[in-house]
Figure 1 (cartoon, one colour):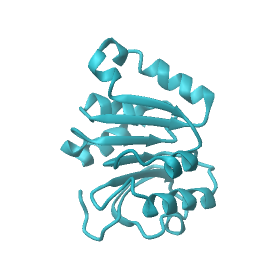
Figure 2 (cartoon, one colour):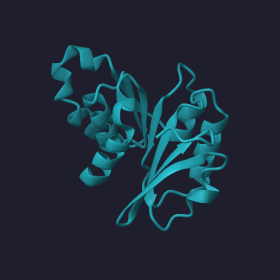
Figure 3 (cartoon, helix red, strand yellow):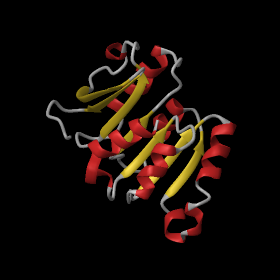
Length: 168
């Protein structure tokens, strides 16, 4: 996981600074926490699992010592599709999607369809999707364009955008 996370943030580089970041299927919150540590403007952690929400809170205890950081994040217990369907407060610059390996393909297709047709991303937004390397992601991502692909053993990471020309 550390190698994957390091690679993702090396690819993103300075794009993370001042970015609005959504950590969807947040799990432990490690991607969002790394974004906070690299000066993201705002990070929302979304997960439907009580144990994940508690783990994120525990993992953020270090940051709670810094009052300016507390204002930069929000933890939300919600189903991913429900959250992105109802959210319209601002545009996300970066969205991390690291769902459970065995998540249904139809559900991920729904997530990508909602994102593509929403007003919460634009042509400059980047979606980073982590998944099991044997997954047939092409049927899930719909109209998104793959701008970069990385492989790490059984894990694959793709970077997606709404437009043809890559941002990375």
